[in-house]
Image (cartoon, rainbow, N blue to C red; front, side, top):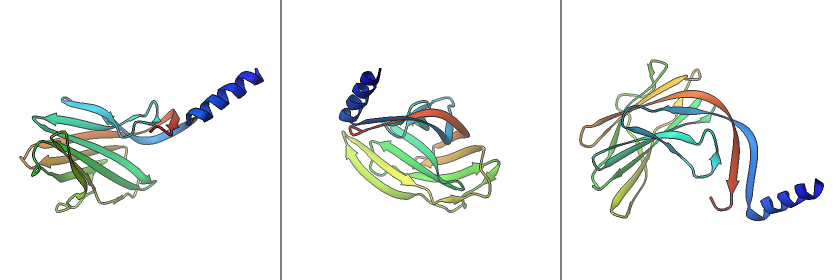
Amino acid sequence: MFRKFVTVSLITMLTGCVLYPTTRDYYKPIVQAGQAETASSGCGYHKAKYDALDQTVGDITVRVYPSLSSEKTLMVNFGLESSQDSDHLKLNAVISNDVQLNEESESLTLTSKYLHDGVYRTWYSSNAFQLTEQPNQLMISVSDSHGKTYQFMFEFTTQSDIYYASINC
C-alpha cells in the first residue's frame, strides 16, 4: 500500500500536477437564452470551472467575468471578439441586490487588444466596486458599438470542489 502511495506521488510530482480539495466562493453564471457558460481558466477548479458567460450576436462575442478580489471588492472583466477593429463595449450597469453599483458615466478600461486569425480580441476591466455587503445576485449590462445591449446574470455561491494545477497550464 505504501509503495503504491509513493509511486502515485512520484508520478504526480514528475508530471507537474497538483490536486487538492477546497471550496470556492464565486459568482455562478445564470445562463439565459443565447448565452453559454465559459471558463476563465483552463486549469483550476473542477466543479466551479464555468465562472463566466458569453453571448454571440452576428460576428460579435461578448464575455463577462465577475470576481471578488477581496471579501468586499468586486471586479468585472469583459472580453470582446469582433471582425472590426472599431468595435468596443460600453458599461451600462452593474446592479447588485437591486442597487446600481456603477456611476452613469463610468467607462471601461482597455487592458489589451490584439488581432488573431482575423478576429480582434479586446479585453476591458471595470473599476473596483467597494461593497458594503456581499451581493447575492449580479446583473451586468453592456452595449456594443452598434447599440446592441447584453445582460448577464450571476448568483453568489459557495461550491465544494477540487483545485488542480499543472506546469502545462
